[in-house]
Image 1 (tube, rainbow over the protein chains, first blue to last red):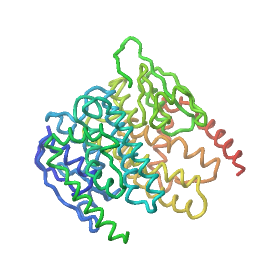
Image 2 (image 1 turned 90 degrees about the vertical axis):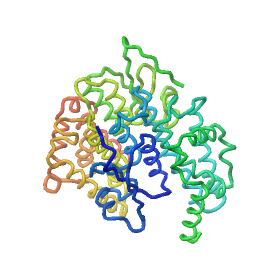
Image 3 (image 1 turned 30 degrees about the vertical axis):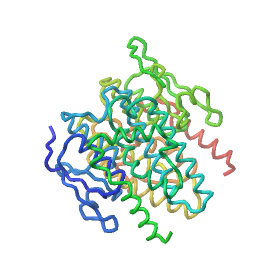
Image 4 (image 1 turned 60 degrees about the vertical axis):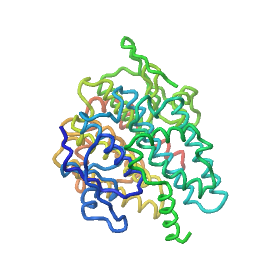
Length: 222
Length: 229
């Protein structure tokens, strides 16, 4: 049985991937030490614990590192399997669905969303917007009439996606779009997730993320 | 869209495949290791069947495992599904310990996100890009070499999940060497990797899967020739 002590999280306050881990830890009520990394000046511990990618988040449990956010979330569920709630369903098919959609967020949502503020030129931006909405509509298709992404319980797939809701305000401003209007089911799902303390107390305010992106753009001379 | 119904009497397993996809082969090996009867449907990716598009509308790719009419997509997801559904037949593909499991999942992602793209980049690209891809791949392979120090297989004492995931490397490195003349790793610099490759290819479930090494060489020759190289 895993102890709640000796859990350290190396993270960056605004990282959607780090937020996944923080939400999972909060869901399970696990106490941990949060360590903010300066990504321009990574700590020796980070470099030691994630030598392959040198990225956050890294969960260090009893001295051993676990890397890659979706992998960390599953690790948390398995190492603290005796703590409720479960973050994955017990049925193998539904577990496969949860993993598939968590992977979909990584492969499609993250890439499409980044493009909105990374592209220059109005034409490219319009293409990026169309792509993002298409991807979000696929998620809405999966959601259907269900409360959460894979069935009745909040879990891995929701945890994978919900930190990106922090991006919506920024995407709406920079992209001159209205994600909530174009994807009302997704917006409702965001509100539903926000009713959970693990989510509402963890996610930074969307305006703070907007400020952060504007700072980043200024530094890059946009 | 697909509702799962438990029908223990009739386990029907279909796999949508292509002979060349590294992601498909690992599923065939898993099904064989678990002694799961299955039907393989080979797809022509230039002309995808309506069935494939129905079962994988989102990515439209192979492999797709269809179990009693229910589709599962994405090879790593499929492998875990197979392991969890056919739990002890004859033994698990993944370890029970959460940390060991997390490590295998980490390296599986490393295989697919890092090693595989750079390896095939090295094979297919030209000039500077080829050189860069070669350096990157060698650096990645050094990490895999380290993983094998003190281990018979990537998954431990017997072949398992991580071996199946890296299996594309064991299976394709020599045939591609023969056909393109590009040799990426040798016994002197990568003794563990070479030993693992030989052991892996000798595992009956792997050895008996089609296409075998000779067929792969022939098929790669065909592609090579048709590109006028």
